[in-house]
Amino acid sequence: MASLRSWRALGTGTIVVYLSLVVLIPLASVAWESASGGWGGFWSAVTNPQALAALRLTLGLSGAVALLNAVTGTLIAWVLVRDDFPGKSLMDAVIDLPFSLPTIVAGLTLLTLYGPKSPLGINVAYTRVGVLLSLLFVTLPFVVRSVQPVLQELDRSMEEAAASLGAGQVTIFRRIVLPNILPAVFSGAGLGFSRSLGEFGAVVLISGNVPFRTQMISVNIYGLIESDNVRSAAALSLLLLVISALVMLAMDWVRRWRWGHER
Image 1 (cartoon, rainbow, N blue to C red):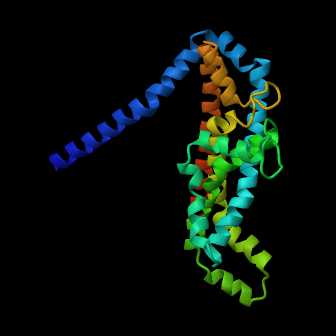
Image 2 (spheres, one colour):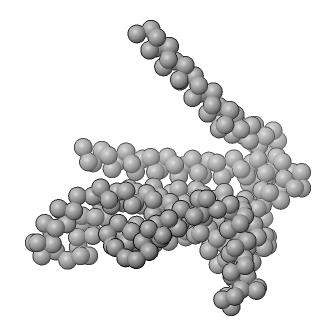
Image 3 (cartoon, helix red, strand yellow):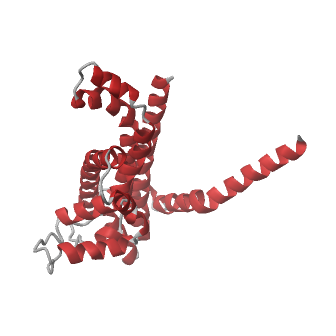
């Protein structure tokens, strides 16, 4: 018994040390640096007009990406689970490509495809549309991979029973399928939103980094570091961290709420 407690204590200690070194200490250092100039310095950094414009653009595009992913990601997951067609395995594998592809390569690919020398004749480089496309690319898997296992485990007998009673496909989806997959949709959309907030590699090339027009907050933070204004960069980083933490807490609340209603 004592040996078991020792192993548990060792395991807990290892986890705490690892998380501290990888997550907690770096985050604490960012918070410390952002507070080194006092509240006035922090407030000045986060209310700078250029930073505010970049933050508004980032939040707006991240919200749009989350909404689009919620719809298209659910549709893709539905097709992959419920339909059979040639090339299904290939499509399923392609979904994970943004996870394995370096984001700077993704940005270069999108710039080549949709830039001034586009083979398709479509030029959205250095525009908000181009930034939106890059964010959609890197966040594609989140909703799909969140919803897909839920659909696979969903008991289809309820849908069949509803169909036998005369319910249409839209009614079955709205009354039976959607309530079961909604927490997964929220979770995937929230992860995509958080990823979009801090995305750098995929947007730095295609955005053009035009202040007040296409500059994202991550690129703005990079510019501050390049200008040796680390304190302001840390303040904006801390702000993004707080926003992401709130999104994660909201996702956890949705999961707990859903679990409580299923008991």
